[in-house]
Length: 115
Image (cartoon, rainbow, N blue to C red; front, side):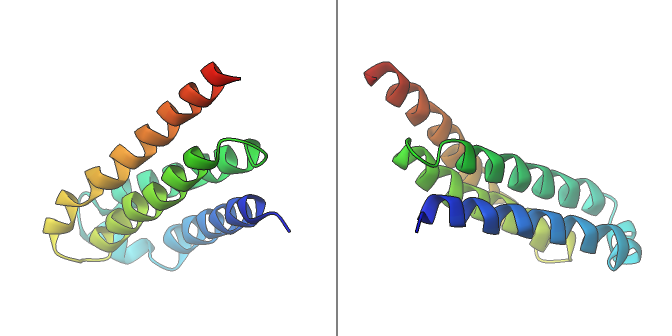
């Protein structure tokens, strides 16, 4: 069992499912808030990109996987929630997820320098 590959698969499946859900089932709702569609698309894009990244380094980069996984959930979840009408103060939490994504990439650099 490889928890990192499982995480990658779950993040990727979630990204595809939420992307399709937003494009079809939520089309009218996402068009009712000016920024909602852009938030939804950004959340889905970041979710999918980091799902691939987690899978690509499943055998190494433990801290990158942790930062990417947690950061992706925070970043994407807050954008999805706002796109669905949640209070905009959630936007103040979104950068925490973004910072964790950046930390994940930087820990990958550190990991590469040590090998």
